[in-house]
Length: 227
Image (tube, rainbow, N blue to C red):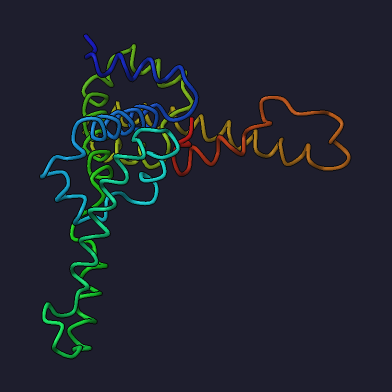
């Protein structure tokens, strides 16, 4: 019987894009929302944020754009980081002594370096491992395999991660067959989109191939994060 996580995967297969990307992003947004709500003043989390300069570019702006944290929470976090950088830049605690250029260079470079990775990136990797673990456990099941066939398929990064872990030869071949078919279909749709952009065919109008270029990007690099 499929696990609860696999039921969630099956449901995600009915939505656009890579189902693993969709579940991964939901988990990331939930994590950020919880952290801002519960842990802004947590010493352990603040230590990590100090060492990582808070979040990477993607996740900092995700939190802003999706309103997963409020202005006060951001201000508390970044005030702490800016203050910590300035404290490390301070050249000498004794104002009566002259500057030491070598020492300043070392302090500045050390302060600008990251001693930890973005905590959201770390958590996302854990989410992905859990999703794929549940998926691969139930993948021989008809329900999960049928859902995958009906979906847009896994993006290539998540497909590779999955295939790297599959030991069952027949399951491996089935997953490859599903995605070979999806790639073949995508190739045809992209070719049709290109053909219809020719002045001789432009009046035909676009059908399902109209967004093939967007689906191709999602297939190759992963689904969009703003959906």
